[in-house]
Length: 196
Ligand SMILES: [Mg+2]
Image (cartoon, rainbow, N blue to C red; front, side, top):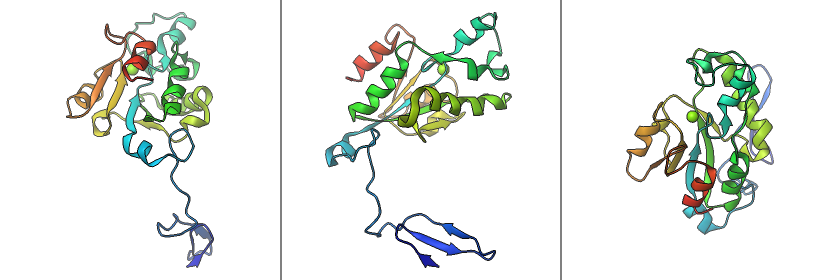
């Protein structure tokens, strides 16, 4: 095993040198950074609450893409249309809200979405959408899951109870922010609730 400046490297049987994770006790190891990309203060590490944000009809205007194709925005199985997720635009206020949450340094922000099992292009299109509209601030912050309640955190902002959203809010210390309802009709009301 060869020890490099930033970590370890191993010489495999086939002669390929592979990088390994940095050693926890390596003095050259980088300190963790906050969601905003800046080194956090100790209080911010302790106080940051995890917030998950759903994509469809929360960050992403799902129905807009259907209207553009001349389809009924309330049609069944729309999420199984190949390539449809690449045609969606952001919901009003969603992109600004995402960046405000991250820059506030009060929250550790992740995108928690479900990609349809019958539509493999959706899995690809979702990460491309996040890169295109949310940029580097969202790097490695996308989680695709059919069981959102398996994720731990303080808040889940989601317009539907499906795929574990309702169950997420039933766990002590966790809250499902039901986006698009009377209490949270839009991003302004959500940001106000989160005090951002
Ligand atoms: Mg949704």
